[in-house]
Length: 315
Length: 178
Image (cartoon, rainbow over all chains, first blue to last red; front, side, top):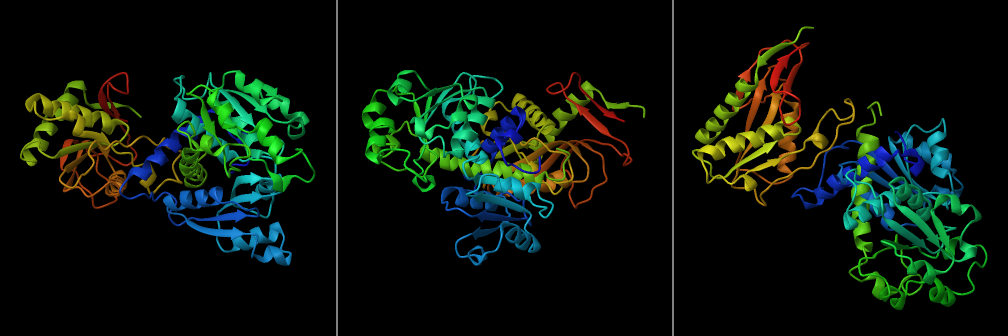
């Protein structure tokens, strides 16, 4: 495995191995020296054509914990504003010795374009491409679910768990990657959202679809994952108003209070508090939103280690 | 190539008992002793040495005196060798400053695993001293490293392979040279 572009790149076995490795990487945080030498002397570039706080910083910390040198490229303030193409940007970075590119781009398939090209030799990690995929987010979510709810199965997968993903499915690469990975790991995954935000092709991705949140929540779920309404990706009106959306599809306090006290609440961030999730819900003990961020560093260390430290291996 | 058994099950048990005595002797007792096995077989050997110490010194507390140290991420040959499984590291004490750590491994060869182990160890703290116990020392060191406690010195040629089999991980117990 040279690149991580999509959850489709991972076998069931790869996914379990990455989660196990993620747990070991997470334990580095408890050491006196929070650093491993595995990627010492390697250079990794964060290539971000789209705004990001947690993913970018998470990858940066992960790479630094493994002793790699990290350069941060953001499209804003770079030569992209002078018209430099994706290809020339990559060639420039590689000419300076960058070996791995962590790519976030607003066009679906951007990371794959670089990985498949004959002009780039780098290892490419997809950190979110348009409305396509965000594989490391799905991995960190799977790790968070596994750590929180444990795994009934000896294999360490998520068999038997029921997971509901709610909100703006259409624009969500997080929903797509999560549906693929969590089902690969044996969980049952359901989508819920307004019909305008649920693409026609979504049904083969999941075990079921709801258009009514209250109906969905009346069926028992182990995990409820709320998605952000991506106003910046909406070219036309998909929802009548934010207030109506919050009312119909938001995880309000009253909806939350009707859930079992074992239901785990997740959100990939950044949150619109009061819109898709009420503030009190996000801050409740059942919410694992900050653990998701913590696990993000661990799982990205695992991915970087797997792709870069073992690059010369036969796998 | 023909296989030759150099240690049988009883030889291995006797070597472990002797090493456990030597460790206690050089440490002037069992105080502040911390055994750390290097996966995979070093972990089993560390457990056995600790249990052997416990037989003679009932006050020796196994739960706070035996752990394991995974060195995979500290190796200098990560990109040359096929992917290795990263295992958990368990250091059973919060502070190693007063401890004499005994690293335990099955075979001492180039010394590179122990180099990695020393690097891994300092990320957890600064032990008072670090010693090394191995079941087999087969020579061919590539680094200035030596063992303090050795089960058996086994002169080998570079094209020979040493296979250590223990009941915990294999169907029998022996050391075979191939």
